[in-house]
Amino acid sequence: MVRRSKLEIYFDVLAIIDRGFSKPTQIMYKTNLSWSSLQEIFSTLINGNFINEEQKKKTKRYYITDKGKRAIYYHMKSIDGLVKPKMISTRAY
Image (cartoon, rainbow, N blue to C red; front, side, top):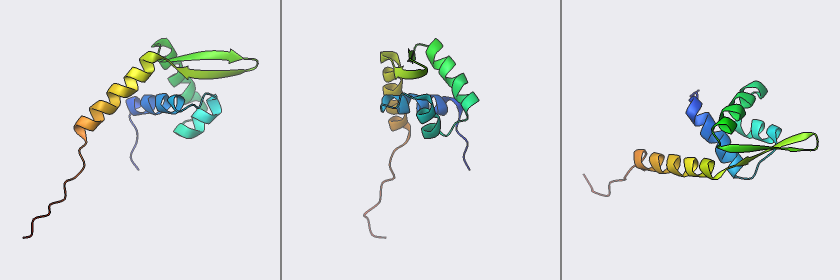
């Protein structure tokens, strides 16, 4: 089993929120994180202004900021530059 780095986890959380999931339990299940780990991630992302937290009645909702969207965009561009699909040779040997 391959473990995710902390950075990969941050980007997973940002991507899930960007896809429209705003409830903490939805985000927790989609990212396969424990509740305590997710709270730590939320704290870091909020302090960095990558996401906003809104209190709605008794529940909290999380929304991605423009800074968070830019971070995802540049992360995806960097991955595209590093990971190239394998070229299949059509030459006969």
